[in-house]
Amino acid sequence: MFKCFFKYQAAIAVALFALSCSNANNRPIIKFSGDSSSIIIKNIDEASLLQVKNAYKANGDAINMVSVLIKPGDLDSIQDELEVPGKVKILGDSLVFNPDQPFLKGKEYLVESYIGIKFATMGDLITGNGKQNLKAQRQILKR
Image (cartoon, rainbow, N blue to C red; front, side, top):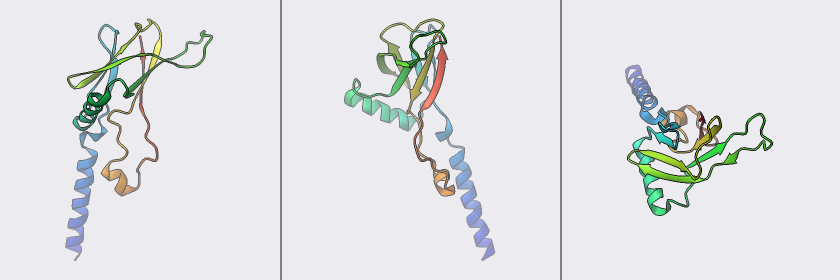
């Protein structure tokens, strides 16, 4: 009986290890393009990329896949983050955000995205560490 119990525990441990080492923990990379004219989100897992492509095909102008906010500087009179208007395009396995106006040199931009964010892995659910609320991936980029 103990032999069967230990085999069962070993099988669970291997399954949890495999789940924790899967690419589910690889977050997308958010960065400026080489010339800083756009923001690129890459390293999106295949399942998330498929969902993004399907949503984009359905109505690309109505979905909010990424938010870009300009952060106020210390000397700015307006102390609120302002949304940067622009368009999102899918190019291959990446998303590209092109602003309506060029990014300003010396300014910081907060990029928020829910692409590739997981509610919880199977291991999190089994161990009781499931997340209560989804949190956007946030990246600050300086032009």
